[in-house]
Length: 135
Image 1 (cartoon, rainbow, N blue to C red):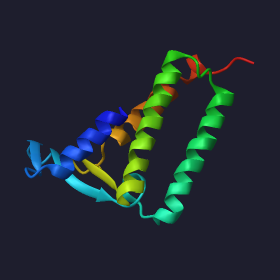
Image 2: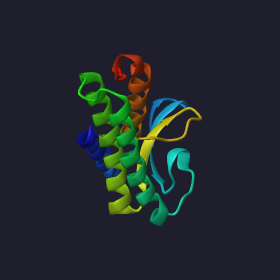
Image 3: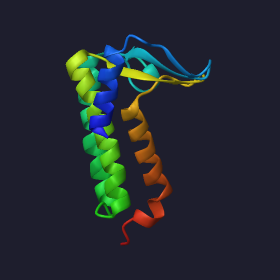
């Protein structure tokens, strides 16, 4: 997932044929530079990068206490979340912003990393009862 995220972002940066309309006025590929957090909410980079690291550390610690992380579903979900977080963090460290490019309707523009984070969290939520540690 990390490789796919980074490769698609390189393609977007180098592409001269954007915007690319997949479904006219609904689904398109564009080049957007997001300096904020989720849904482009503005936060200074000096605060944002340490905040992301703290969320990852505390989030993983909470999951470790609550769920059986050796289960393949949990492992895959966490791998998707971490790969997405790392992909966006690499953009922030390298470029000072995150490259977003998937535009669907009025929804905020996102990227492969964002999709991985979202799907990973959704899988954990849906499978919570199956993954919860018994005490």
